[in-house]
Image 1: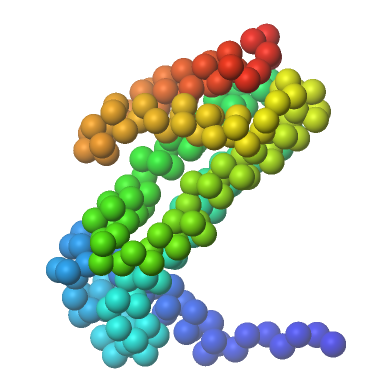
Image 2: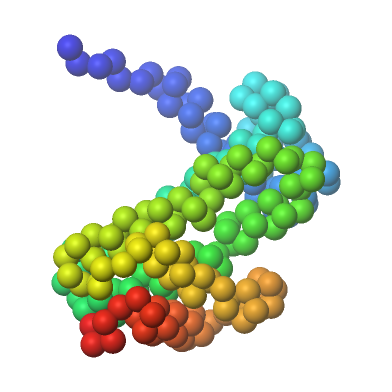
Length: 214
């Protein structure tokens, strides 16, 4: 039996909810939780104020769901960045550098920076936002990267070792220097600087975990 297709009304509700969540995240990122108002969120999303309440009941619920939606998007983008590690015909060094560079770009984008700021600034008011970090946070990226590195080890492209530890160290080498270089996200980083950071991270990673000749 062919499943029933979602109705136009159902699609409309999904689209409006998505618009509300994205608009809310932008407003919360600009204003912070305390200063943001539901009317401004409605204006940002292009819907009426009652529509916001119909979908998400109150401001606190809206904040939690907007944060979760942003965190999910950020994670999905990072997981997609690991794609080249699956069956790439390029050399390992080039592939890892490409992945590192993309991860750095994503770490610097507006959504990621805003998400980190909101988590840091509102964690006391919303301690349950730690659940969002657990569900969509860095450990999920580390797990996915460990899986890719384990496959490379099995294929003989990396020496056999602990893939979880290797993944953790790779991410640390890629992202760690960025905070100091960007002065905690307050200074824009050029593409050439990101490329330099990516190459340095991969060079150090391969010295520790890989074959220097790959």
